[in-house]
Each structure stands twice: as structure tokens, then as C-alpha cells.
Image 1 (cartoon, rainbow, N blue to C red):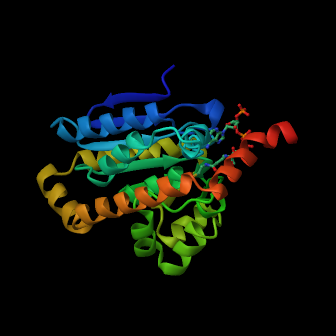
Image 2 (image 1 turned 30 degrees about the horizontal axis):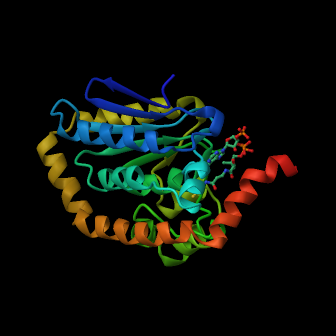
Length: 250
Ligand code: COA
């Protein structure tokens, strides 16, 4: 079974992260496949809306730490991640996401690019970038202060504090909290409603709300530069080794 499942449901282009044994940690191949799906959906006139989902219990545990370790130890990588993030920032059609359970790192910051996010009560959003010796990514250093306010953004992005679904909704990070058994129904109902709107008016309305996407892309590039530097730092290497050896030690 593919680790990214792509499906068309009428006017909805569904992208599902499907690597449950690793809690949907995102590999380079998964980023590449998601970027291609976003770009394809954006250019297909029959697609009106993108939907992003994970699996029960895990939206995503963030970037695959083994892939980070490759870069940390002198290997190459990162291109697919940044290509995906830019496709997300430049998406031409609304994005609806549904989150159940784990939402770490990019599993949280992705939703700052979504138009409507639904999450279940057992969801926790968390970005332990600084604890990993890293810095915020995906334009979150720009988007989170704007969405959450500076202090909540600091708690999320710098302190690595977890945000429950309820807190995330109160803070404006997500749209609604819904029970696990109706999560996907709620996501698809919202996507259907979007798909019924006059597409030209909807696009103009969304573009007006989002403003210049190129400012955001520039920030993603600035973050990427710092992120790649940080991946090679002792702070980051030590954090990755600690994660990878925790089971052996425990
Ligand atoms: N990269 C690679 N593998 C990951 C991963 C990641 N980001 N997150 C989880 N996994 C793997 C685990 O190593 C484990 O693999 P194994 O069964 O082969 O040992 C499997 O997924 C299940 O994870 P586990 O830790 O047993 O699940 P859990 O429910 O106890 O905890 C998390 C889930 C997400 C809280 C925990 O795995 C975690 O903290 N992961 C790292 C998150 C992270 O720092 N992401 C990067 C953010 S920038």
C-alpha cells in the first residue's frame, strides 16, 4: 500500500498520509508525491478543493527523523520538502484538513496553510523544533504569530508546548473540533460545500484573504536556509541520536 494515497472524489482531490507504522512520519518520497498532487489538482479545472487526511490516531509525526539524520551527517536532501512547502503556500484552491491524534512538526505547521482544519478531541498539535536544535519551518515563523498572536506562537514554536484541539481552536489554529467517528464526514461535507461555490468568486475571495504568497515563499526559503544549517549542528545531531536510541535504551 502506498504511503501517500491519492484519490479523486468528484471535485475533491484527496491526499492521505498512510504510513501508520511510523505514525505518518513524512519521507522525501512522500513530500514529492504530495507536491505533485497539489500541483496537479491546482491545474485540473475539474478539481475545486484539496483535502489532506492522515490515518486514525496520526495525522503525522513530522519529518522522518532518519531523513533528517542523513542531512545531519553530511548527506543531501531537503529539496522535496521545500518544493512541497512552496506548493502548499502557492496552492490555488482551498485546502481542508482533518486531524486525529498525533500532529507533530510539519504535521502541525501544514494546517497554517489550510483554509479549514477539523481535529478530534484527542489531537495534540506540537512543534518541538527548538528542542531538536532546529527552527520553525513551512512559513510558520510568519504565519503562526499572525494567526495565534506573538505569545501563543512563541509557546507553540519556541517552547514546543502542546496545543490540544480545544486550545488550538480557541487560538484560531483550527476551525472545529469534531468526534473521531465523524471527522472524515465533517471534512468531506466542508469540501463538498466549497466545491459547490462559484469557483471564480471563491478564488478571488481567497486570494484577497491570503494576500501576497510570494512573501510567504520568501520566508519559507529563509527558514529553509537556517533549518539546513541547524540540521548539521551538534544540538540537532544529539537530539536525533537520542530519539533513535531511546527504544534500545528504554
Ligand atoms: N521519524 C521517523 N520515525 C518516527 C517518527 C519520525 N518523526 N516519529 C515516530 N517514528 C517511528 C518510531 O521510531 C517508531 O518506529 P519503530 O516502531 O520502528 O521503533 C514508530 O514510528 C512509532 O513511534 P512511537 O514513538 O513508538 O509512537 P508513540 O505513539 O509512542 O509516539 C510520537 C509518537 C510522534 C510522539 C513520537 O514517536 C515522537 O516524538 N516522534 C518524533 C517526532 C518528531 O520529533 N518529529 C520531528 C518534528 S520536526
